[in-house]
Image 1 (spheres, rainbow, N blue to C red):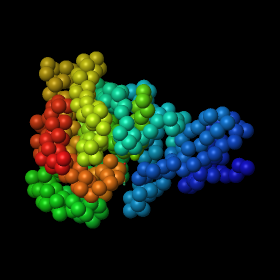
Image 2: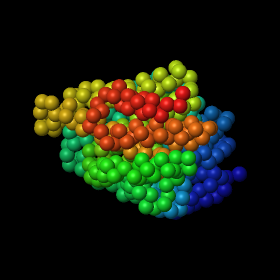
Image 3: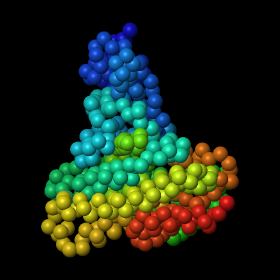
Image 4: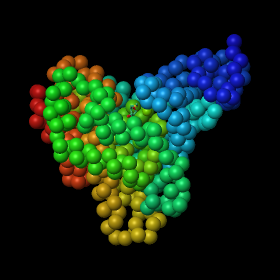
Length: 409
Ligand code: SR1
Ligand code: MG
C-alpha cells in the first residue's frame, strides 16, 4: 500500500518513500503499477534508488543529494550539486547524443534527479576488474570529451554565453574536494586523511611527500586547476563514472562539473585505464585483455587529438583562434595538462583518501605493492615532464617503462 507523503519540503528519502515520490512526480509508470525500490548507490556522495515495475519491465533511477557526503559527515556539501548534475547531463546529452543517460526530472525541492536506468550496463571499473573488453570504449569516450570540452570553450562559444555558463556552473564545494584530495593532501597529509597501504607507506613518504620538485609541480597544477576556466569539464571522469556494455558507453555523475582545464577529464580517463593495466600486469591477466587495454590507452590520446583537430576546423568561431597553427598549439597545451592530470590522479588514488578497487582488491601484498609503485613511478614522470607526452604511444611507454623498472616477473 502506498504511504501518503508530501514532497513539498526536503527530507532524505528511504527506499519505501521513493515509490510514492516517483508516482507523485512523474508519469513514467502506470498509476496502478506495483513498484519495488532498492537503494543501489555505492558512490561517495549521494543516495541512488532503482524503482521497478517488474510486470511492465520498466525502471528508472532516482538520485538524491544529502547535505553531507555519504563517505563521511566531514564533507558538508550543498545540494546544489544535483542541479549541476541534472543540467550538465542535459547539456552533455545535446553535445554528445547517446553518450549520457536521459534525464526525466530535476526536482529542486527534494534535490533529486530522476533519470534513465542503465542496469543493462555495468560500471566500467567493475567490468575492467573482471577483465572484460569493450571495443568502442576509446572511440565513445573521445567523442564525448571532444564534444563536451571543445564545444563549451571560448574558441567555439560566443564569449558572453560561455561566461554565463561559467557562472551557472560555479561549483565551490565539489571543486574544494578535488583541490584537497587531488591537489593538496597526497603531497602533505596535512589533514591526516591519507590512507596508505602499510607496505608502501615508507616508500610513499620518501618518494611522494619527500620529493620537493614533485610538490612544487603539484602546487603549480593546483592553481591551474583553480583558475583555468577553459571548458565545462565533467570533473570526475574516472572509470566509476562510466557505464558500459558491449556496444554502448554512457558517462554518468557529472556533479563535479565546473569550468576547468580540459586535460582534467582526459587525464582522469587515462589514469584510470592505467590502474586497470597495472592490475592486469601484476596479476598476469589474459594477454588479449592487456593488449586491448594498451590499445585503449593509446587510442584515448590519439583519437582525442584527431577528433579535436577535425572539430576545431568545423566549429571554431573566435577570429584569433583561426590563426594558422593555433589549433595545434592549443591542443599541445591540452595534452600537457592531460599528462599532468594523469599523474595527479594516479598519485591521489594511492597516496590520498579516495581509493580505486582496481588496486585495493589485488589479492596479494606483493602484487599490490608492485602495482602501486608502477603507477606512482609513472605518475611522477607525467607530472615532472608533462610537456614531453603528445602521443598515445608515449603515454603508454611511460607506464610500461615503469612496470619494467619494478619487474616482478
Ligand atoms: C569525498 S568524495 C571522494 C571522491 O569521490 C568522488 O568520486 C571524487 O573522485 C572525489 O574525489
Ligand atoms: Mg561520482
